[in-house]
Figure (cartoon, rainbow, N blue to C red):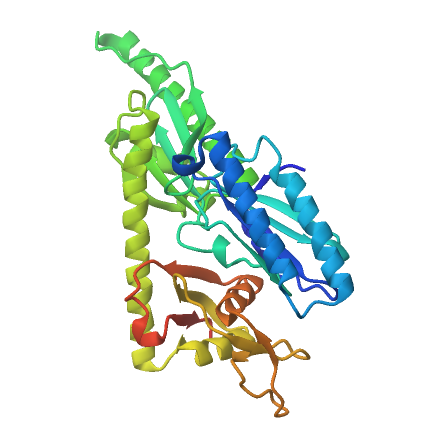
Length: 380
């Protein structure tokens, strides 16, 4: 079975996975090439996570016999999947596998960022490791001059050059006269055609993979024409401009410069969201602070942006009849206590994904301290 790149649609599918029978086995394997480049290192990591998964399964005392048998079979499938030789391909730095035999679910996904190697058994898929800092947004970096274009795709740390376009554009010269004017118009027509070709290619790539954000780089005199040639869907995703030699800059240098721009954009985005949160809370308008208020907003489908501290873990409960989330041991509307969940913060992320809300996991541990590690901007 192929290891497919993680997409937003995958996250929605996993967030909605709530099997009527059985449990979900979630296995995460770090393949960061700085640590696991060699076959022996990867083999050690694979054996470690398989042993951990086996212990997690066998030490559970709340499983029915059929659930235990199904999980053992799921682990065998995971073991076979991790034996593949092509796990770390196409920029993959981690693998996430989700299995639930009773629901005929088995999904192997490539993750573009490093993830912590571990295994989880629960009533739902564990998606929190996939929505951490840097895991969600897919970037494009488009570099264009008068005859060439280069496209890089990936996350801030895992950009790779995927497309290169070269068109036959004659060079300008300065001999003067009517022939020079006609020649110059011909050259400019070739440049316009080149930009249209580039715009068509990158839009086709966007339709296949989808960019959340785009950085562009070009000679200053071409910037306006380049943006004008791009499809409106791509123009609205432009988040910055790079000053860089299109043809002669190495791939590693492009990735370094783009990575710095992406990091700066993400920091600015987090700061803006926190400022917006503070302003709305000051007006008591369309914002929620703290676990109780955020869970209430999620239960009502009002969350637009969910802000979560990286690594937040909170026990909670869920009403088995209505699916409403609440703090640990909080009563349901009829006065009973809901079913306990190990981490209601992850349940909150799953609910946010189901509602097509944006999730921002803040790397700054101080950013949400006054809000107990979780807050939200609301739609209404």
